[in-house]
Length: 482
Image (cartoon, rainbow, N blue to C red):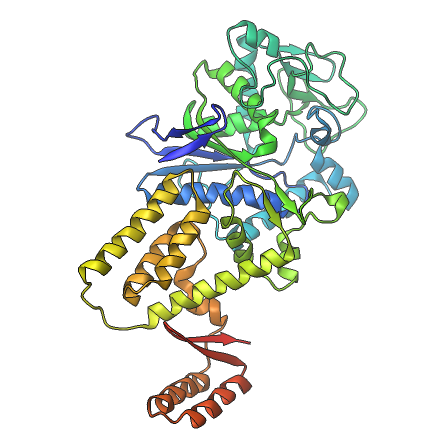
C-alpha cells in the first residue's frame, strides 16, 4: 500500500513502525464552538476511509481523534493562532451561555452527525468509543510543556509560555518541512507580538487576562491560564498512541502552522523522531467553484443538507467521487447527482440480494470475481483512490457475474465505502413495506408471468396509489417509497 506523505511530498510504501502492535492513526478533530461545515466533514470522512481501508487489509488499528474545546483562538484565521479571542468564550458571549455549555452542546451535535455519516468512532485506551477532549487532558498538556521547558525550548512573555523555534533549530532540528516555513517570514494580518523572539514561535500556555475571569482556566507552574492550540494534539496522541505512531490526518490548512507545531513540540519533548511517520492532508472543499466561508453564506452544515431533503450518506458518496488530494467542487446539482447514484447503487445491491440460488461459476466468471476484488484492493493501495474504487463497484454491478457474487462483492467493498449498502432494502424503501403493498407486488409478478400485462399494469397503478413506485431492472424489481 502506498500513500502520499505531506512531509516528504511523495508517495511512499506504507511500512508500520512496529509489526507486533496496532497501527496508530490520529485525526485532528473539530473545535466545538459551532456546527462543522461540509468542508470539515470531508476531512473526517478521509480519516474514516483510512481506518476502513487499513482494517480491510487486515491491520489492527487504534484510532484517536481530539475535540478542541479550549485554546483555539480567532487569530488563527488571520495568520497568528496566538492572538484573538478563544472561540468558545466568544461563542458563549454571543449565545449568553458558558463556554462549558457551548462545548457540551456542539460536542453532542458533532457526535450525532458523526453517526449519520457512518463514521467509525475513535477509541481511547480502554477500547470504548470516545474522543480525546482537550479539557480532559490539562494535566498531560502541562506535563508535556514542562518537558519541553526542561530541554531549553521555551521562554515566557507577559501573555504566555512560548516555543522557541530558533533554539529548536540551533539544536539541529528542522521546523516546518511540510510547509516550507524555514525562516522568520510568516505574514500575519494582525499586529505582531513584539515580545515574541521570532514570528514563527507559538504559545504552549496562555495566561488568563488579569482583568477578566475566563470560564475555562487552570493553575499551572507558570500561572493561571489555558493551553495553546497545538499542545493538545501532541499530549492526546502520545498518551494513547505512544511517542511515535504511523498516520496523522488533517485538513490542508493544518500544514502551515498547526502540524509543524505539533511535530516540533512533540519531538522536543520526547527526543524521538519521527513523531509521525506519514502525514495525510485533505484538500479544501470549494462551493460553486469558489471559496467557502460563513461570510459568504455558503459554509453549509449537515443540517443544511438535510433541510433540502438529502441524506448525510449522499454527501458521503459525493466525497468519494474525488480523490482527497484534489479539490472537490460542491454544488447542489452535484449533490443531487450523488444522491441519484447512491440510490441507484443501493437498488442494484438490493436486487442482487433478492436473487436466489447459488450457481457454479464458470472459469471466466470466477476470474471476473477475482479481478474485481483485486482491482478494488489496488485502488485502495494507491493512496486511497476512492473514485477508482467506486468505478470498480459499478463495473461489478453491471457485469454478468451471478447476483450472489455481485452482492457479496458490493457488501465487502462497502466495508470501506461506508454507504450502508448491506442495509439497502431498508434505506431504499425507507420504511417497512406494508403487507398489502407486498401482496400487490406479488400479484403483479404472477400476472406478468402469465403474460397478463394489462392487468399487471393496473396492479402497478394500485401500488402507486399506495405510495410506492415499482420498476423493473435487469437485476430484478426495484421498489421505492414516493
